[in-house]
Length: 250
Image 1 (cartoon, rainbow, N blue to C red):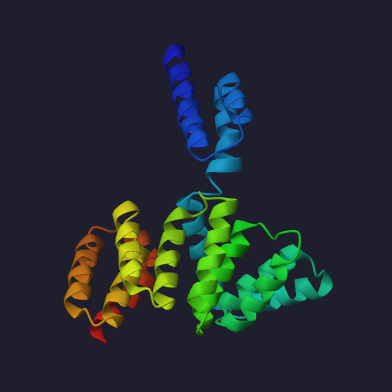
Image 2 (cartoon, rainbow, N blue to C red):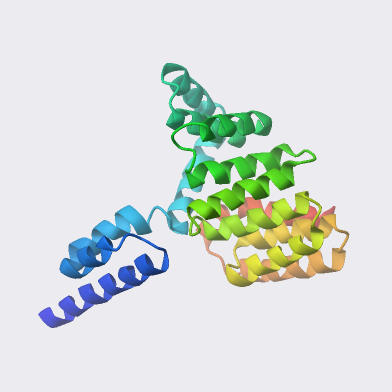
């Protein structure tokens, strides 16, 4: 029986080693993982794997949504107070995110741009946030500037939130008026990641393009998948289902 346990530890370490190599992590992780399979795997999971996983992002979104429902202004007030007390780059980033969540997209753009001038200029979260804020704010150059932000993000870290970056890229192409490329980008995001957000955003885009048949077909497929969701999945994806439903009915 001890050999079974040892083998399992090694298999887990091997899984994380493959993940490290595929995502360009530092080579010292391989030494840690194979020298200390169990402890190394735990450390890698906490330090590298979990922060980039969809699981943590989903949990964070659920928690933020619950807090926002109870007190919509809470995080924005806290972020503003924190920045007033200590105008650091981290607090500026927090304020930018809070402004975007509050619907103040133009303010969020300004905060993200300010933060990019500081020590976090190469932070992928900043580039992702700026692209999101630009698209939310709109404007003649929003799509082009969002694409530039996403290009900078990929140059810094091309494995960052790849599923969401793919959808954001499609939206940016659409905002820049490059509709054939936007269609290709949406379909590529669906083919590679098949997230609910990707399909919902694609449905909304199809409806905007006047392709009611295509939007309805995608909506039917999404509803078919939703029949197999549990309560948690329905709660997490409620926003995207509403977006898709409203687009089809419009």
